[in-house]
Image 1 (tube, rainbow, N blue to C red):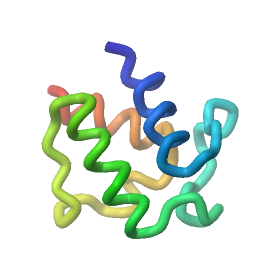
Image 2: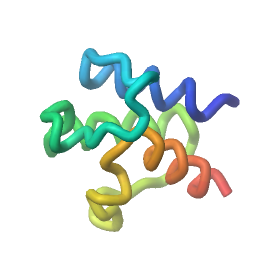
Image 3: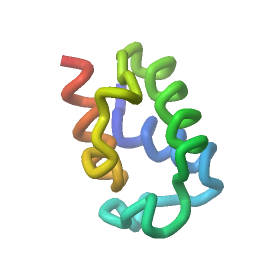
Image 4: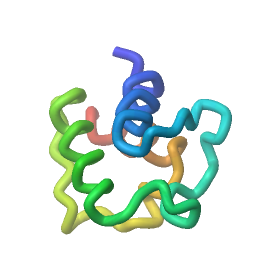
Length: 78
């Protein structure tokens, strides 16, 4: 399973933006993610990758770029 491609697809579904050329763009600072979009994204990530990513345990700065999301999902997949 290609984590990067899956994460990019989910981010595009949630934000409407293709982030493949902006992997280090801060998704919160750019206004693409807010609290509701973050929950939607996390639910999609959990479903797609069969991981558990409780919102209460996630620091926003660990999930603020596409690259960080890919790394976090990869780590959660163990």
